[in-house]
Image (cartoon, helix red, strand yellow):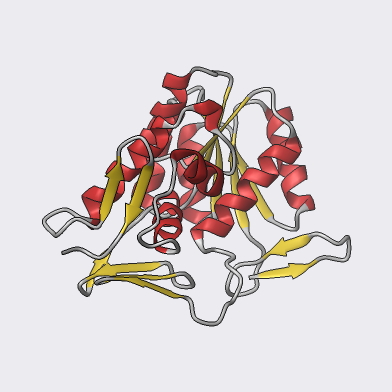
Length: 246
């Protein structure tokens, strides 16, 4: 749900109209406090933790709608923390913070289940913008629409409830997988290039590393097409499309 604040910003609210909740995990108190202040300015509820164990305990109690997670923590790395968070909150979108800027580190974070990645030093505006995109995509603060159902063959996606099923069998997707599938289903039988998908789903070119698209297409195929007539197709040198299974 969205509203407009007195300052003219579009505020994101939970479906129960409570403020969005964000957990900030970073072992540098000045940075964590700076991030927290910026997020509170958005009207969000914010809690913070300085290590992995504290992050898991806080998430269990706070039930955040999104997590800002530093990769380097004193007791465990961010990827291990993410694994524990996913057991508690399987759908919560996670934005990684890291001083590492290699493609391998970025792909490792996404492969582990992270939804986005920001390298230090970063601007607060960038972090807020990335979080707003993740929260919208996760459905926590989706704006109300009329007909929210997309249908391609026996595959059904509800944009409001974020429920997906094929042949009446529920399919669980992460926030990023859901956004990718929604983009494909909004353009049935149309070939979408990797550049188009990166721009629409990730909202930036991810350093030109289009292989992240291949990675998430493979995730979708395992969940959508496994044991069924394929719906997601590759057009070599052109991109990907979705069409009813034959």
